[in-house]
Length: 433
Ligand code: ACO
Image (cartoon, rainbow, N blue to C red):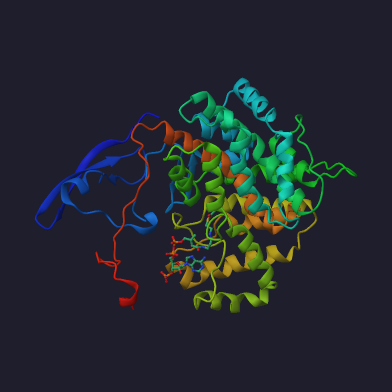
């Protein structure tokens, strides 16, 4: 990656009797940043920003979010246009390479990914060590970490070719592993990938086909799967992506870094929110229970899951596409009167008119409608975050690769404000207490 950030001005910071002039840097769009890299060296103070609410951790050329306007761009292209016009593998190519593929580039990329979808046969036995009711997300964290044992020949991060091979392997094998985690958790045999199918179709088939009966995915289900994959493919420096970058900054191998990202994604405040949102809709159950639920949220007894976002202070553009997709799937599957959708629509209407949510700029995020969509496609709730991990893998890899090739990159090592005990001496045990 070639650093493109340019100096546009400067800011002066005075701490006690020391002043330092800090460069102000400009990206292509979005707010300027104050470059504080020399602050500690010149003033002996650090900045304090738990949760990185005001801190850019890196330069990136992959994804841009304008949280106030509700804009999400992958390599400059609006998310809704990509979801409408492209296959997931076109978007994956875009995220990895910076440009949409030509027809021949796409054919070659599809061929490469398709022909890496099988996992080593010994890998299949790896699953047997888990309890039969193991949550699929727990299996994912372990299985993806284990890829570094099975594909150790592509773990040299200083070799560009090995980085490319590991990227292709992960994008190709992630749906296979996710489907295996699902099949194992429901006690069904693994279904092998089929090369003539698209990425989305293949994944659905590996999840829902059984030896006794083949599964031909409904075209609307394939379209919805494609949308889910694209909408969740990347999202700038979110918690799991930052985790992948942080793990990668120590030059850990790519499989281990992606496993770290999956672990971070698991939490209910991040990728686990889709499962939590669906459980919440089920718990509310009927529209008449919504006012009491909203009161509970305002009294801080619970959160409205699938609402709110660190960056979006208006409608999440992914949620707009996902709401439409959810309706299309419910219509195609004859579920127009789906009680969950009724609760979701009414919950959204009431929340968007309520002063608590207006004051805090809380809008639905992508997880609010993705759970309903995945539920209608036939996935149990504990597979939702797994699907998210399948989608986000390409974003993690693109960001990891960008970090490795960024000349300004250093090992990620934040500092702290220490408020513990100052220096003291160890007393003999009889004199303690
Ligand atoms: N329900 C109720 N109140 C909320 C919610 C919510 N979902 N989200 C934020 N708030 C309130 C907070 O209580 C806080 O109120 P206060 O100022 O009166 O104390 C205010 O809004 C600001 O919230 P923060 O927690 O400071 O915002 P932050 O940026 O740290 O958190 C987060 C963002 C974690 C996404 C939060 O909105 C949340 O927990 N949402 C629910 C979980 C969720 O849907 N996560 C998915 C995120 S998208 C993704 O990962 C794909």
